[in-house]
Amino acid sequence: MKSLMIEAIPDSPYYPEVNFDASNGVCLIQGESYMEEAYKFYMPLLDWLKEFAVEENNKVTLNVMLTYFNTNSSRLLLDMFDILKKSVDAGNVVEINWYYEEDDPDIMDEVEDFEIETGLEINMIPFQA
Image (cartoon, one colour):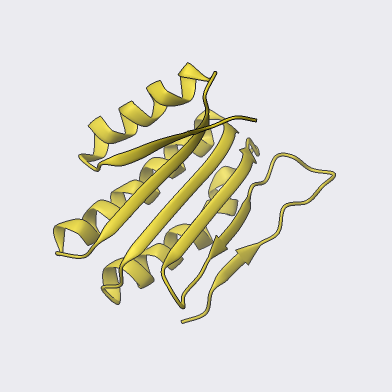
């Protein structure tokens, strides 16, 4: 299986950087995510996670460093977490780390909602911008 990489575009802050590394299962999504047709951006990520985590039964570490995401992106992030929950339910190891700016309580609320929706544990890791 190949790794999935999407570079951030400096002139377009709407799309996050993505690095899903097939060699070690460490997946990173960082930046901002507020494109209009988010599903077009996230479908390859969802497909990659389905294959890597669920079908191939690999360990996944997902590191999320999104400083902003819109409602459409939020729905698709929830879809990502649902895929990872299926992997956990199948007995696989999944670790999710969400890095957030210490002075951003809204992100903490969003992540709590993701945990409630999916039943997954998400490690909240503060950083200073």
